[in-house]
Image 1 (cartoon, helix red, strand yellow):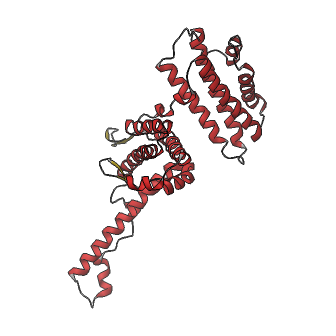
Image 2: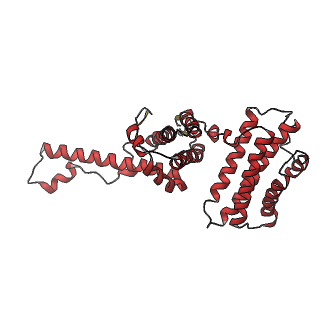
Image 3: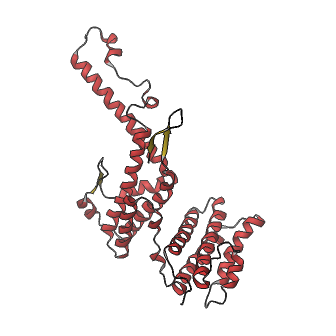
Length: 325
């Protein structure tokens, strides 16, 4: 199809964002019990359609209509051959029913909307923009190069059905996210953070009065200091681990499954990643496991990365003396 505006970097970003909204809407329908999620999914489906249609209108008609009403844009696009006007109109009206009529959609209705949205989305990309749905990579939404590049490689490996390398690259991306959170945790929870070490001392100086018959044995003092040091490390390590688990939030259950099936890998202090390839080969990963690992890592990164805003520590005068990335 002849387009008045070719699909450039800006249009691609808009289409990727539209696909992201679609994926987020589908996540709300993974639970068919929480009714409050149903309407949220409809709103996100309609928002995904709106971004898609406005981007398509810009490419086909040659002018930016992002400030125009979506209903007017849909009517202007009806002349396109096989344009799914009725499908898109139904989705937008379902969102309007929530806004203006306080309608509570059922789970089955939302699943129908999901199927219509995804099918029409793919049709528009293929028929009018000559793009495949899988060409729009959500990894483009990731800002951290150390995380994005391994996940982009994993996506290519999946398309080539190289499941072993897809799993390893996905774990590499997750390891970089984990390393970044751990580095923040080291600043937020120091090695001798008083809130976690208060009243936990195992000190020979405090305890020796109970063992007056033993005396101040250098060996016992050394043992006491060693035990105290190890206990402190355990407490601080646990605090940092809890900080990481809190960042996962609702993804915790999927994380436990990911933890049980991913290959063994190491993260060094300098951020170097090393996968135990022999262990990965033995697990003989198939498409289902590779897809799960990649999708879990991608969705977790997209959820957590926007929350990793730089933390500025200021003095009483307001001067920034440390920034935690």
